[in-house]
Length: 195
Image 1 (cartoon, helix red, strand yellow):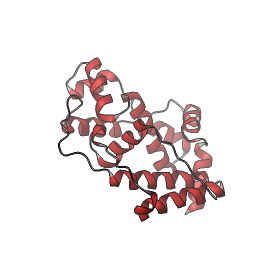
Image 2 (cartoon, helix red, strand yellow):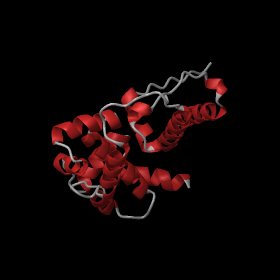
Image 3 (tube, rainbow, N blue to C red):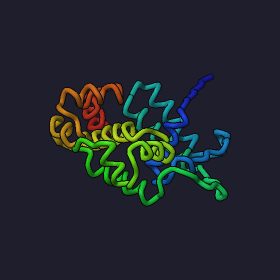
Image 4 (tube, rainbow, N blue to C red):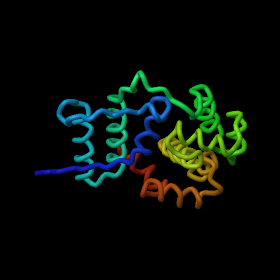
């Protein structure tokens, strides 16, 4: 008998919901499901188990990403849900685009709040409601995601560090290892060997 249990924090699921759907985190409503009722969810779990058994970290990450996508695809936001507080969809999109376009910059709470037209204190509270994470954590996740994307290409790692807003390659390597469990160089080798 084989058993695989995956625990995902609600805030992590909601953060990924925002990334995938471009909608407010509070709209994420995952119904209770039975594993066998959704073949694509079952396939994603099977992929995770196979990757875990082979000790292939990249395959595990890809399979987990697929699982998140499938589970979030099942999410059916309540039509009667009236959101109070948080950022408007327009402001949320503006903030997300600004962050993604400026990951190589030193992003400040003051700058993000000014884009939203709010005080720093109020912006941080509204951001947390809409994104299910703090502005600093969101920027951190986006920097790591951009780095993962760039590592699939041929940019030098030192260049990727700068493009993703890290002070230097050493800082990038430490942060990337903490976030992913592997160094940028090893991650790149894993990606290249899987193609």
